[in-house]
Length: 187
Image (cartoon, rainbow, N blue to C red):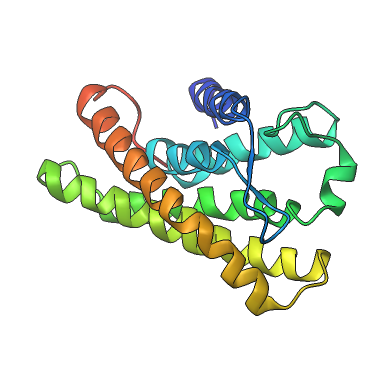
């Protein structure tokens, strides 16, 4: 890992934190609000790749652990990990990795713009929705002492917004790939 990798990871950690400035929107079915920070996780994966995207999320995790209020709604600190929402944060780590890993495998410079955009979208949906929900739903069910089916059905309210976030991440990933050819390869 070189200085450029650390700077890019720190930049995307800052983007994830900045997206936390948008207030959370509670949906009421499960104790997890809608936030914009999962968009930052998807962006880190598609733009930076698996390794650097994961490091960006781990930087945010370090900020949470030391008590900085970097999560949506001004949350942070070790006590955050005892809440039902924490499963989604733990899922961010794996979501960034999977999103980056899939985009590294699917997106090639010689593809058409449309194919690149579709590949970025597929990577963002698999990593940023499927993987993220797997961790989040399981944690919510256990921490909130509700059934997995209730946690699953309650989480379905997030899907339309997360599909839009995946589309935005795909568009940004494609734009960065086309507009910044000097950005080092995602890895």
